[in-house]
Structures are given as C-alpha cells and as structure tokens.
Picture (cartoon, rainbow, N blue to C red):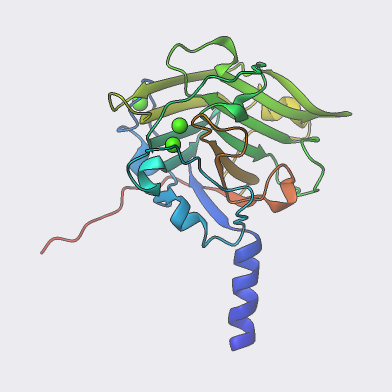
Length: 263
Ligand SMILES: [Ca+2]
Ligand SMILES: [Ca+2]
Ligand SMILES: [Ca+2]
C-alpha cells in the first residue's frame, strides 16, 4: 500500500495533471475575466512559498528580486492566479496578478527578450509527446509583456516547426488585453484568446482541431525582473524549455462554478 502511494506520488510529482474545461459561452477580451474565470481551469494562488514545495521547484531558477528598502513580503512581490480554457477555435489565457513593481525596461532590449521584462508566457505542446526536444515540432510559447502601451513585441510567439527550433516572431491570431489594477504598483489582469489553428497547427502539422480527451503539455513561466537581471521568475508545472518536464493538460468538457452549500 505504501509502495502504491509512493508510486502515485512520484507520477504526480513528475507530471502534474491539469484538467482544462471547454468554454461554452463567448469571451469578451477586455481585461476582465469575470465572464469565464469560474468556468476555467485554475488551481488557486501561486506565490514563491507555494512554489518551493512543488516537485519541479529549483531555487536557482524560481526566484524574486529584493530591492534596498523594499517593504512587503514575498506575496506582495509576486502572487497570481492563472486561468485556462479552450473551445473549438481558441485557447483562453488569463491571469490576475499582484506585483509590487511594473518593470518592462530591458537595457539590452530585443523583441524576443520577453523574459527580461514583466511577462507571462504559457508554454504549450500540442499534442503532448514530451519528446524532450526543446522548442521543436509542436512546442509553443505564448508570451505577453505587461506593458500597457502594447508595443508590437508585447505578444510574442516562440515555437518549433518541422525542421526548425526556436522560431521567434510576433504572435498573430491573438486578441489580448492587459489592465493595470493598482496605482503605483505592478498589479494587473491579463486576458488573451489565441487562435489554435494559426499557432498550434503551424508548429505541428499533425495537430488537429481540439476535442475532449486530447492531451497537451503545459508550463507557465511568469517573469518578474523588477530591476534585476534575468532569472526573477516562477516556473509552474515544469522545469524549463524541455517539454518532457511539462505538465499533462487534458482537454475536458464544460465545467460549472464551484458550488457553495447553503446553511
Ligand atoms: Ca473578459
Ligand atoms: Ca515583483
Ligand atoms: Ca514586476
């Protein structure tokens, strides 16, 4: 019995299973998640204290930047809820974030350097093969720099394709909105809708329109440099660019809100 529990724990530890519901109603991409977030996948608040108990945690990679004189604890530095859903045409991505500083200034800026700026990036492999080839066929990163002025590089697509790895280009086939929510801080809501055929279908010609039961790979990379160099970030459900470490994202049918019992 103990061996069985350990085995299940190991499998869970190596490969988190994320059941992502289909949305049956429309989404208005306006920086407010109210119309869909209670029907989406979310597993609650992530901060560094929760993250350091996750099986994929690596202290050299998951870290935050402490400034001289900084007030507030680690939850104020960065904590977030992430939301994910799908329908026949789109992946829906959302985040509600508490961040003490908005930092999108990169001294060595290049359009592809989202990871040197406040940003959230959903790494998706479709379908999941967990081949371990970094950003090869089927691997995608949908990245959003949290810059309210929305420069052209703020929605970015890193992906693989047949015979190619690490293709870097602006993300097309996307509607997205970011709304800053706390004056003098870096809090925000991000809402995005990514067209799957124009992205997943390009990175892997074997990709087919999604249906219940399909399995994708998923990792979330949330960058929070806050004046520091590269490395202020959370890696959630995986350990980096190697898709064999990413979580198992199962496409499931529509889900209702969590019910609260009456007295
Ligand atoms: Ca909305
Ligand atoms: Ca921060
Ligand atoms: Ca920040």
